[in-house]
Image (cartoon, rainbow, N blue to C red; front, side, top):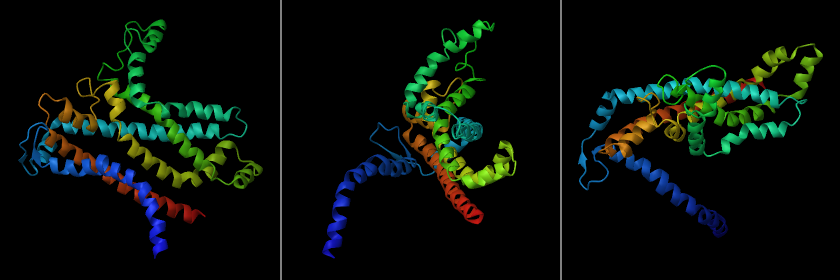
Length: 300
């Protein structure tokens, strides 16, 4: 017994800083937001008024909340298939045994992932600047006078951020697919080639069916990641123009910190609603992973 206690003592000692920091900066803010969502409080006044579920009613009755929800869902619906499909295509190309400089290309595609998102957003503002940005200067050279205000127009801003987001994070999806491709048995691929199957037929009838369990997992991971786009959207558009790029995270930020009179209780209620959405995504992720494991087990 003394040996067991001694063996479990030191791991907990080393884990204590992590546990304390997790409790202070993750667990406590989550619990506090639940409590604040039941209050009418600006965040600065000492007096807090308990209002029950009124904040939730106000959030669900606000058209701008549903606009932000629609923008978030549209962003996810467009970028998730784009990231998953483009990541698979890049992984297939980089996994080809005859491709030279594979490590260089993998590093090049993964480099935007490790770049700070806020820096990417600020740089992209200069790149897409309608007056002096290199994109619009290139468009003017091909005869498009006046250029395009990619980030200043409600018809193009969201799509521009979608493209930048996909470029920045497709490297993560590529790594997922590269790992999945390593599980495809080489002897099965060689047998298909011996039988005279083309590369397309080999991919369609051999590789792709074996990748279906990984497709489920990678898609669910991408959905969860694409719901959290606050930093890139804030630095590139700030939710504008005319709320056309205001996702739920920016909606919460606006009410909690950027409003003339902050409404921390109202913002906390919106944050709890977003948390419930993420919880549903997490439950779907667990269900999808179990289903993928069953498919993989059945296939083996």
